[in-house]
Length: 132
Image (cartoon, rainbow, N blue to C red; front, side, top):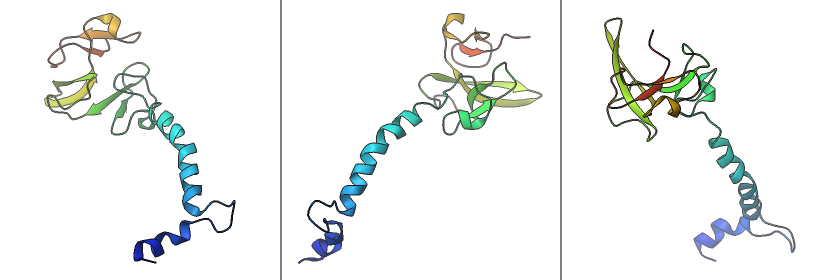
């Protein structure tokens, strides 16, 4: 018996008809994998409504200022946002701030209550609340 065979021998079935530890893990992962994939798809993406950071995709934040909340990424650089977003950079209170905001070409591309804005320092339109 070589060292590899010895190292994995404890994973073999312990008696006929009884799966070994490896088989149990493989089955468990097979059952859990679809749930993990479905769970990952449930997180809100940039521009989606939210009430807390936990509702947004990993690394995203929930901006509670706009109606219904808005999942976004804080502090971005040009071309660093996900495919569905632009990095919008603008001055607020004398400070430049940047956020990944959902891309759009017209108001119909945005969720209810939001407009496609071209005045937020992004290379094209982004969905956000109407300007005041």
